[in-house]
Amino acid sequence: MSGKPVDKAILEIVTENRLRDQRGILKELLERGFDINQSTLSRHLRKLKIRKVDGYYRYTGDRAGGLTDFQQVLKVIPVPPNLLVVKTLPGHANAVSWHLDERGIEGVEGTVAGDDNVFIAVRPPEELENLRKQIAHIFHVD
Image (tube, rainbow, N blue to C red):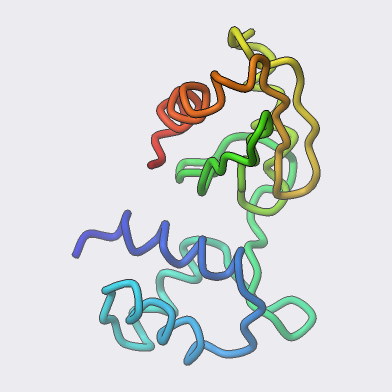
Protein backbone atom coordinates (compact mmCIF):
# COMPACT_ATOMS: atom_id res chain seq x y z
CA MET A 1 0.00 0.00 0.00
CA SER A 2 1.19 3.51 -0.65
CA GLY A 3 2.08 5.81 2.23
CA LYS A 4 -0.65 8.42 1.76
CA PRO A 5 -3.75 6.32 2.62
CA VAL A 6 -2.02 4.78 5.64
CA ASP A 7 -0.77 8.22 6.73
CA LYS A 8 -4.30 9.61 6.60
CA ALA A 9 -5.58 6.59 8.54
CA ILE A 10 -2.90 7.05 11.21
CA LEU A 11 -3.75 10.75 11.56
CA GLU A 12 -7.45 9.94 11.88
CA ILE A 13 -6.73 7.24 14.48
CA VAL A 14 -4.62 9.44 16.74
CA THR A 15 -7.06 12.34 16.35
CA GLU A 16 -10.15 10.26 17.14
CA ASN A 17 -8.68 8.08 19.91
CA ARG A 18 -6.61 8.39 23.08
CA LEU A 19 -4.03 5.67 22.54
CA ARG A 20 -1.17 5.01 24.93
CA ASP A 21 0.81 2.51 22.86
CA GLN A 22 1.56 1.57 19.29
CA ARG A 23 -0.30 -1.75 19.66
CA GLY A 24 -3.54 0.24 19.83
CA ILE A 25 -2.66 2.14 16.66
CA LEU A 26 -1.70 -1.12 14.88
CA LYS A 27 -5.02 -2.70 15.94
CA GLU A 28 -7.00 0.28 14.62
CA LEU A 29 -5.02 0.20 11.36
CA LEU A 30 -5.69 -3.51 10.92
CA GLU A 31 -9.42 -2.90 11.40
CA ARG A 32 -9.19 -0.34 8.57
CA GLY A 33 -7.40 -2.79 6.28
CA PHE A 34 -3.77 -1.73 6.83
CA ASP A 35 -1.49 -4.58 7.94
CA ILE A 36 1.85 -2.97 8.83
CA ASN A 37 4.47 -3.90 11.41
CA GLN A 38 5.63 -1.88 14.41
CA SER A 39 8.85 -0.60 12.83
CA THR A 40 6.95 0.66 9.77
CA LEU A 41 4.43 2.34 12.07
CA SER A 42 7.27 4.02 13.99
CA ARG A 43 8.64 5.48 10.74
CA HIS A 44 5.20 6.80 9.80
CA LEU A 45 4.74 8.33 13.26
CA ARG A 46 8.09 10.15 13.00
CA LYS A 47 7.33 11.40 9.50
CA LEU A 48 3.88 12.62 10.54
CA LYS A 49 5.23 14.30 13.69
CA ILE A 50 3.10 12.15 15.97
CA ARG A 51 4.58 11.77 19.44
CA LYS A 52 3.50 10.76 22.91
CA VAL A 53 2.25 13.80 24.80
CA ASP A 54 1.05 13.34 28.38
CA GLY A 55 1.04 9.58 27.82
CA TYR A 56 -1.01 9.57 24.59
CA TYR A 57 -0.07 9.64 20.91
CA ARG A 58 -0.86 13.03 19.38
CA TYR A 59 -0.06 15.03 16.29
CA THR A 60 2.65 17.53 17.31
CA GLY A 61 3.53 19.11 13.97
CA ASP A 62 2.93 22.65 12.79
CA ARG A 63 0.67 24.30 15.38
CA ALA A 64 0.85 27.73 13.73
CA GLY A 65 -2.28 27.09 11.70
CA GLY A 66 -0.46 26.91 8.38
CA LEU A 67 -1.38 24.32 5.82
CA THR A 68 0.80 21.22 5.77
CA ASP A 69 1.87 18.86 3.01
CA PHE A 70 -0.65 16.22 4.11
CA GLN A 71 -4.40 16.42 4.34
CA GLN A 72 -5.32 18.59 7.34
CA VAL A 73 -9.06 17.98 6.99
CA LEU A 74 -10.17 14.50 7.98
CA LYS A 75 -13.93 14.60 7.41
CA VAL A 76 -16.95 16.81 6.81
CA ILE A 77 -19.98 15.70 8.83
CA PRO A 78 -23.53 16.97 8.29
CA VAL A 79 -25.52 17.77 11.44
CA PRO A 80 -29.09 18.45 10.31
CA PRO A 81 -30.88 20.69 9.89
CA ASN A 82 -28.24 23.35 9.10
CA LEU A 83 -24.82 22.59 10.56
CA LEU A 84 -21.65 21.03 9.17
CA VAL A 85 -18.74 19.90 11.34
CA VAL A 86 -15.31 19.77 9.75
CA LYS A 87 -12.88 17.53 11.67
CA THR A 88 -9.25 18.63 11.31
CA LEU A 89 -5.91 17.70 12.74
CA PRO A 90 -5.22 19.33 16.10
CA GLY A 91 -4.31 22.98 15.68
CA HIS A 92 -5.64 23.33 12.12
CA ALA A 93 -9.25 24.41 12.61
CA ASN A 94 -8.48 28.14 12.49
CA ALA A 95 -6.64 27.82 9.18
CA VAL A 96 -9.46 25.73 7.69
CA SER A 97 -12.10 28.18 8.95
CA TRP A 98 -10.17 31.14 7.51
CA HIS A 99 -9.79 29.33 4.19
CA LEU A 100 -13.54 28.68 4.00
CA ASP A 101 -14.42 32.26 4.99
CA GLU A 102 -12.07 33.64 2.33
CA ARG A 103 -13.75 31.56 -0.38
CA GLY A 104 -17.13 33.18 0.29
CA ILE A 105 -19.07 30.00 -0.43
CA GLU A 106 -22.73 30.67 -1.17
CA GLY A 107 -24.88 29.22 1.63
CA VAL A 108 -22.16 29.34 4.30
CA GLU A 109 -23.43 31.90 6.80
CA GLY A 110 -20.45 31.65 9.13
CA THR A 111 -17.79 29.45 10.68
CA VAL A 112 -16.59 28.93 14.24
CA ALA A 113 -13.24 27.23 14.84
CA GLY A 114 -11.95 25.35 17.84
CA ASP A 115 -8.69 23.42 17.95
CA ASP A 116 -9.65 20.51 15.71
CA ASN A 117 -13.27 21.24 14.68
CA VAL A 118 -14.94 23.87 12.53
CA PHE A 119 -18.69 24.46 12.84
CA ILE A 120 -20.34 25.82 9.72
CA ALA A 121 -23.80 27.41 9.73
CA VAL A 122 -25.64 26.60 6.49
CA ARG A 123 -28.56 28.49 5.02
CA PRO A 124 -30.92 27.30 3.68
CA PRO A 125 -30.98 23.87 5.39
CA GLU A 126 -31.88 22.23 2.08
CA GLU A 127 -28.34 23.00 0.90
CA LEU A 128 -26.67 21.01 3.70
CA GLU A 129 -25.67 17.97 1.62
CA ASN A 130 -24.67 20.06 -1.38
CA LEU A 131 -22.38 22.20 0.79
CA ARG A 132 -20.98 19.12 2.51
CA LYS A 133 -19.96 17.72 -0.87
CA GLN A 134 -18.56 21.07 -2.00
CA ILE A 135 -16.44 21.51 1.12
CA ALA A 136 -15.30 17.87 1.06
CA HIS A 137 -14.23 18.43 -2.55
CA ILE A 138 -12.24 21.56 -1.62
CA PHE A 139 -10.21 19.53 0.91
CA HIS A 140 -10.14 16.28 -1.10
CA VAL A 141 -11.99 14.15 1.45
CA ASP A 142 -14.98 11.83 1.05
